[in-house]
Amino acid sequence: MRKFPINMHLNVDSFLPASDAEKEYMVQMRPSTTFFRDGVKRLLKNKIATISFIMIIIITLACILIPLFWPYKYDKQLGISLGKPVDPTYANLRPFEYGETEQAKIAAGETVFPHIFGTDSAGRDYFIRVVYGTRISLLVGFFASLIVLVIGMTVGSIAGYCGGKVDIVIMRIVDIIYSLPDMLMVILLSAALNNSGLDKLIQGTVLEKIGLNILSLFIVFGLLYWVSMSRLIRGQILSLREQEYVLAARACGAKPGRIIKKHLMPNCIGVVIISTALQIPSAIFTESYLSFLGLGVNAPMPSLGSLASDALNGIHSYSYRLIIPAVVISLIVLSLNLFGDGLRDAFDPKLNK
Image (cartoon, rainbow, N blue to C red; front, side, top):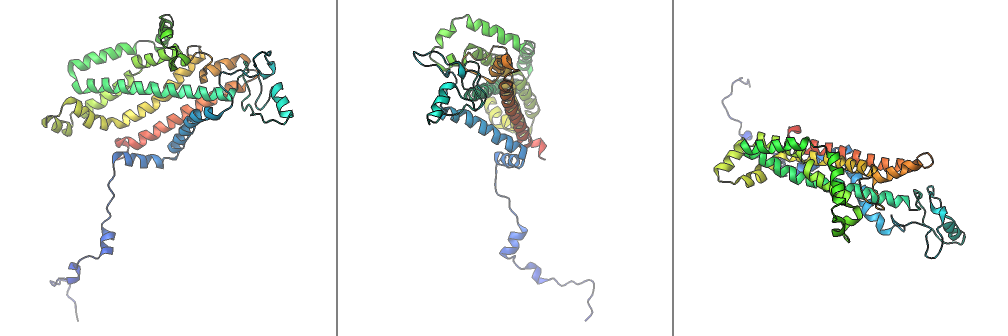
């Protein structure tokens, strides 16, 4: 039978209900998710950022857990016994070397824990001092970044949202703070605190061990280093406050604090994350070179900068004492920078269109 090219008859089979298999094939529903989950998935796909994050976790856990079972203390001088003369053979031991007393114990069949990195000029185990130095550097970095984050977000969001005279006044204060030399401020504040009698008030506390120099460093971070964060947040708020959802929130009667907290700050999360992640290595660098100059933690508490400074005295004979803290600082800063880049790529909506 000849078929005409134009057929007015309908194909009834085309109107049959679809089967379950056809529905699953045609309708591919994406499971519900959140902005944070999407960011984590993108972050885990970045192998370099994931490895850097694992490295940071390993270093942090090592600083916390190793001192719990390590047989040596960071401030204990080996070879010193009550009523006996000091054993000079414990000073400047090379890695996996032992003092004369330890060699005698080994000869008698006793087990002696090795000195993995040797000992310093005072006869203290160098490995545990590196661990404590890393702990101090990380503590300063994270705590200082937290101070910068809180102050910078608060000041920047207020300046950006209010605008007008409030913005002008805050930005002029920021310009003044930018002109202050941070290094000079740390030195002057350290000298002022050391002569203020504050050391008597902190006796018996954690601040007594780390010293007034680190306390002055925290104060300087709270006074000076938040300006960069506040400028970034202000720029983001200025571009977001004219959006339609902000106007809708105002029309509904939302207060400025709620608009900033619920609508504006979540959209600045990319800038906040990357700025905070990059502020941590900056703070670690600052603490390291201040400790290197003798403005860091009080002895015998070590930091990576003070360990590197002490190693200069025997750099020709014991160069590894300078290399070890330098490598640890480089590893921490590199891991934090790479992880910060990965966070920016994962959580910045503008980079994931």
